[in-house]
Image (cartoon, rainbow, N blue to C red):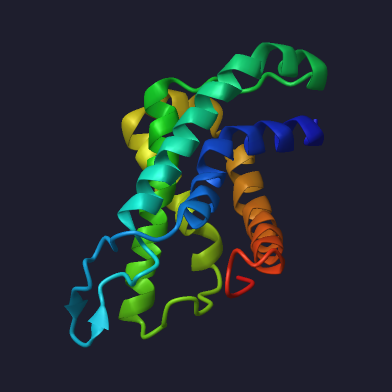
Length: 180
């Protein structure tokens, strides 16, 4: 029961978990804020780029479609009914994750944090809030059927742990300049 709950929750979030990692790998390009400031601080910072946002969104959306392709055989192997992702859901999870991260960058700048500075809680859940909120707006019936309250609890508890592990791994591989 617990294993199927965790597997189902993490599966449903995969299209939201991958985009920010893909954006880091794609990196560079024109910043979304084009260098603009609000007061004396950048709106978002140089780390939020159009290329990263597009690559992250496409990667998450394509991952959702790939997960659909392996859904039936994998569901049989793990013994859990895994979510299927309509195209609009794959896109909303992926783009919502990217938008949540951009929103957190805006909050960081407004609270005086520089690029790469830790913002505990926000750093770990910004993309989750963005992905879930956009998906709820785009596909409310799918959202309600997939993200039951127990699954939402798993997502909120497991995501910070996964976030820390993946960021430390990216830092150790030299893909990030800070381990958070």
